[in-house]
Amino acid sequence: MLYYLYDLLTILALVVLTPLRMFRRGGFPLLRRLGVGAGEYAKRCAGKKVIWLHAVSVGEVYSATVLLDLLRKQYPGYHIVFSAITPSGFSMAKGIAKGDMQVIYFPFDIGAIMRRYFALLDPKLIVIIESEIWPHFLRQANTHAIPVVVVNARISKRALSRYIVFGMFARRILGTIKLFCVQSQKDATRLRLLGVPQEKIALTGNMKFDVVYKRKDIQPPKLEPIFKILEDFVVIIGGSTHEPEEEVLVRVYSNLYKKYPRLRLIICPRHINRIAKIEKMLAHYGFTLLRRSEIAGGFGQHEVLLLDTFGELFYFYQCASIVFIGGSLCKHGGQNPLEPASYGKAIVFGRYMFNFFDITHQLLSADAAFMISGEQELLKTVALLLEDESLRDNVGQNALGYVMDHIGASVKNIHLLEQLYTP
Image 1: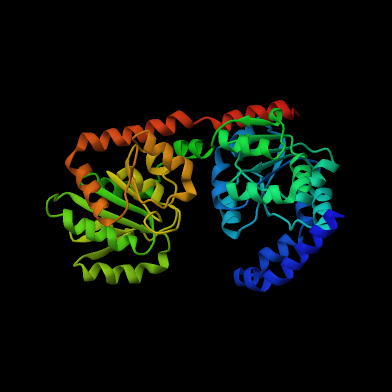
Image 2: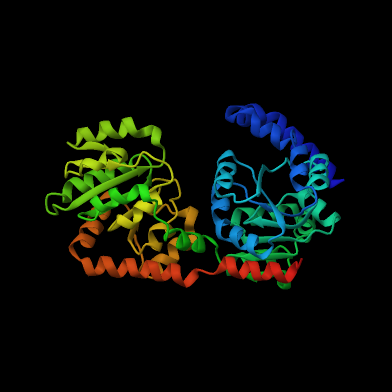
């Protein structure tokens, strides 16, 4: 009865939200998630053993990068189907797909649709990244005796409250999962509060550490000439910034660049469509915007380099002396501080880092980052780091040490998967 009610509510939600959310982003994902064209998935899976890997969006897909390579090595004869929900997650999964791996949109969690997908794909193992708990998805896996493992599992305070509200229904759904490989002891405790037995919980850590540490060894050849130019400077990078953080950084830079002639500022805005507005702001302070594609001719003191490309910020972090984490002076929750930490950089962020709450506090406890409350404190902190190079190096090395201490979650997870499901 509960599943019929869940289906009814899901369908009603689709009817109400589709005009607002789906068609605004294009109809293709909507049709795919309804199962249109799903028959082609079965053709590619025909005669193959299938592992179904699922992640909701970019962050979860990113976390799975190293695990995906390990899965391919551990189960060489298997066909991997990688599903995502958001268009950005789908695109990223496509970007990291290798061989004949198949990337699909995750179907809507409606009974009839899920039954069809399980009949078409016939998976032998299901691996969920982080916290994607869908009742019909898990019910079908349980019906077909398919083991389900949640890796990089986390349970937020908000999710815990929701599960408690749904009581026995939530416990029944969670009970179909064979193993939770959790990021932290806090996640393990919350799962136990929801009735998950201890023997189904393994503390393996956060796979994002593995991804950033492995990725830092890659340097796109096209960036090498730019990095050669940047070697001559002391560089501050503002990564994935939001309004008004760019202006704050420019004012801080304008207070310091005369004292430090080799100082340069690089800004990578979170939303590139704000470039014109940023350029106007720079002109107001007497600076010229230099686009990433224009740096080949040099990098003057009155120029601010703006990264107007996608996917390159991570690699630019290796050129930085100081990194400011965007989205942390305004209430956006910050960006991933592990990326500059993996390069051993001195990291500064504001107090709004709630998207990376645990990592933020662990970095601060390890003397591997600075938290500032506003522009004046940012100015003082940056000035201190510029003046004291040994402090800057020590903070950066602490950050790198923190990353090194936490790598290995992907390998632990693959070992547990092997124990649970052996071909």
